[in-house]
View 1 (tube, rainbow, N blue to C red):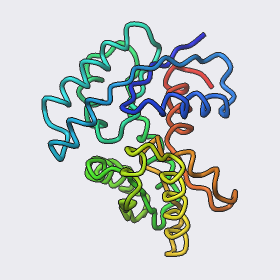
View 2 (view 1 turned 120 degrees about the vertical axis):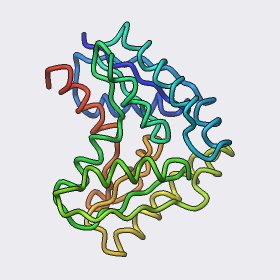
View 3 (view 1 turned 90 degrees about the vertical axis):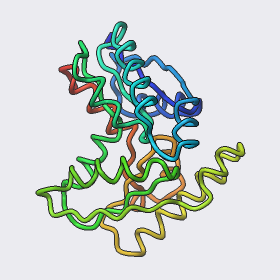
Length: 216
């Protein structure tokens, strides 16, 4: 049994990733979960990912390597910490949205990237724009108004409904593909018709982790 350790910043992402694993069909893969909401909360208070939070996140990711075959960071705001953590890690350390970015830009065109948390905008923009170089893709970032406030207030139904509406709006505005930048947004796709559904990071990130472990 291959093991993927996930570092989350919200509790609900545990169920999101377990559901995504079931959908992928990888039967010889098990997930473990560490949840650190204080890391995202600290970045939100500061308005950005501080060097201190980045270093703490990197240390946590390296620690998770001890009992895993791959490590996934599922928080987009903390994503840049993966670069630091991966330098001396004994197993692959990956940000879950990296595979999403590669998938989204592969066909070129206008890509709408939806975020719920303001602190996610800049690291996500850098990730997607780097992935888009050479593909001809044009990245348009969008913060979904009111979504994160709804989730923090405990109204997950409103959170997902707001995101689903934003996906429809992006489609109507001419986006070739829509990507949900944060893992917590993934279930919004279930509220849309199959032809409207956006790309999400749990599915693509898990598939990338399995590939990095040397199997499919």
